[in-house]
Picture (tube, rainbow, N blue to C red):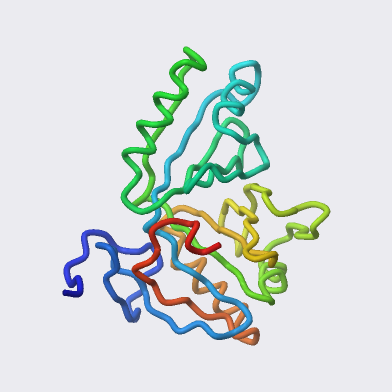
Length: 221
């Protein structure tokens, strides 16, 4: 039977949103067919790992996390992103936030005795994937960041301003085409989505319908 009672709500819902319930999450619906697709990934597990920004401990943590500041790397069905010095955001399948927190607390315990924060942020952050042939054209309208491949190649992770919102931008190409993950505070999520849709109206920018197969980011690849 279809789910009817959500236990969580997407960060991208507005007063006029048409919604459906997917794996316990109420998500906005859409029928994307234009040159830019926006996919709501708010329900994916999000875990923050934070430690010293420099020094030997930071180096050991980067090794343990599998990637460094400015880069993102896949580890099985998790994507580890380093958008700020000494800070990583780990993205993974829905419902795995607790297990991901436990995994990295254990993994980092042997790396350092310095204070390290490992904290679940799934419900407190918004996450979108922006992809399609006109993706770079749309993003260039909303950020001063130079998205040229020379400066932001596949696997890049950085923190910048998109539509005047502080946003983590992770380039994670799909089938050889530029694709970006945008991550921001939950309170800014709806504004960011609405601004992207408005700026990309002439490009056919549309929201992709939420789908039960969203078990993890790997389903988008």
